[in-house]
Image (cartoon, rainbow, N blue to C red; front, side, top):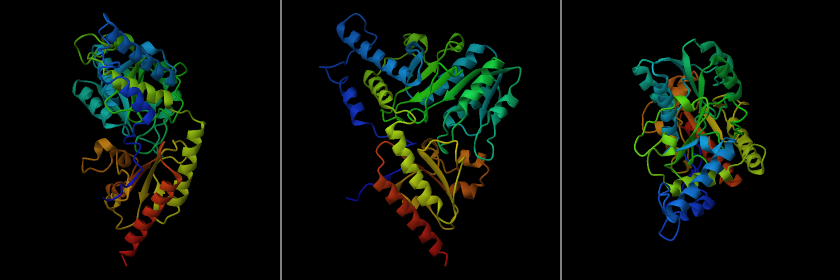
Length: 384
């Protein structure tokens, strides 16, 4: 049986941490917390409700929010939909919305749907380094701007948006700010009490938790306008109906509790591995970095490999990485993020994303460098 390729696609999904699995197992089977959290009339439901609320507190503590402002969803995609559609409906009539050309499809497609219902949309272009600058948001604000939606960490480039500076401008204007933070937890410090952010989307499976569970922070400025998108039962304070998946929620809470903060030992280890990847790969002829070199997380590296004949698909048996986001990989189109960055289609197709995480080792980093070095050398040699 062939050995598994080296895993360098943590931005697509992370393996569930064994410690998280243990907490999830405590909610499966008839001897444990299998009850319906909404069944408040007996011990089984009460026990399930207790662990659900503990998980809510764990998520809230990681981002310094009030637990009652955390709403469970099935994913960051659903959280993005609830945030944008829910607020749009709350305004009662269409207005103006600002987003960027770099956003995840869960935001871009939702924004396009609102546009079909009369909303005016401004899609900001990044600067030459792939950043959405606060001054660009400021310049795009209009008297009828109701909502701004931007991601904290770009899922393809790893670049970091200056959310705090943008939030101040949006709040002063009187609009609401939604932030897709699926790629940010465990990589950036998030303090929702200190930032003027009104809505923030989270995902468990980007933070060593299970797939199928996410959350949305709904702050006090957004709460009066928010309208539910899934009805029936009035769960989650009326904002998201449906029987709560106790084991998934407990898994997300545990994953967020285990997520690190910038400066901790794990973060320092990731930075060391990232520096080695930079050194080993950017020294190769024809290889350059996509996105800003400084304002970024250490976990994600997007490289243009401008070597004629290089084919990232040929790496699949040795190295698991991406050429675009996981949600776009089924499409044959080039990455919309790289095209927005200014790359033409051939160069966008020659780019690869390597992302590292909790279980990446130094030996794996060295092996990945070797795989890409050999691939580039073979591609160059084939032309002679």
